[in-house]
Length: 580
Image (tube, rainbow, N blue to C red):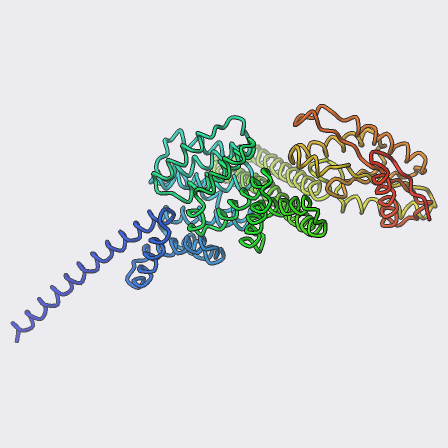
């Protein structure tokens, strides 16, 4: 009986050993498969998806960290297919729960990229700070470089290209290699294309494309090709730009990468329009709209509606042109709102960073105070002196903190009430101030005048010289008009290129002279930094409370009528409202 028991125990022991060995072999095999999936996730999409499905069937046998690694890869698959909310949930699960710092780091990096696609810049900054803080603690240089690449992508999407270029310099100094070098070169070229295009050569794009192809990063290579095509279009090499993309169109479409496909069609539409191949331009512009129904990618659809508008205008199909012009204006507003959201996110991130630094400083001060208290308990003879010092330090910190908070509130109030480009009242603040003045003047039956003016052919300036030139024109126009008005007058930007001036206590005749001074100052503007050939003029409409009453909407309506009469009479003139 004893011998039988020994034999059973021996068999059980051998079974346990074999089971452990089999489990270890399986675990190692899973690690290899996960690592393989990591390597091919962007280079070989079909094989990656197939391998992910195979791994999903074996998920019950994963270790904890293998499960988190699989969830991370699943998030990549969701993001690539456009299921951004599913991707966010997967990446957040990894970030919140994994104890593997490198995997947590990559989860944060992926969240940055997804929030950039969603244009949710505030949430992206949260994980950006983690990447920057954890970067030095990542042992694997390739993973750390990948994090810096992700930060560079985020800054490029925010159009903060100088930050992106600084990261590229850092990566170059650390001799980044492989896939990360391919990504870094692509990001650097995009940043340079948007900031220093005159310093670029087509050969630099070709070199980066060849490197990415060698690394198997076909999608990234095609993204760089879109930037090369944009560079060639900027240089009026339209046929070459078309050739770069059409030769690789099958690869681009097979990638199923929506942003790449939409960008490609938008660039081709622009290039075909430039060589007057209107039918091809129309086909590609319409494909942008079909592939981007929810306006997820803003710039390509703005460009495409403009192309369609120009084609309809060329064909004298004014009804269709009007429709596309309306859609073009709508998406331009979305683009403007997105730009403002980016600026606000940057300002909030800076504010939160300063606030965090101040909190750290405050904690450090509190720690110093505690140390002082311990020292004071040992030397009671000098207790009172140190107590006074402690109180002075505390009051100073509180004073500085209150001062800082007050300054921050003033800054935020300014951002809410003033147009950051022209440093004039925004529409809401202008309306609030004007209503207050008009209400006060109505009680004493005093006169106030309103000037409304609009820049002539401003859209043509934007289209011909670019939006940077347009911004410069708006700033200089605002400065010129500010010199013509009194301190009590209220100047505001109430539309894209439309301004209003409320003149309290000013008769219509005097208001007309001020309007003409402004018109003359605007028409004399020259020596623009962006282009000396820009010609600027504006059409003015004037009314007062005697003619239009004390309701701001009536004043604006009558001044607007007069302004459009000025435009119909040939622009660059002042027209006074005449009642019917």
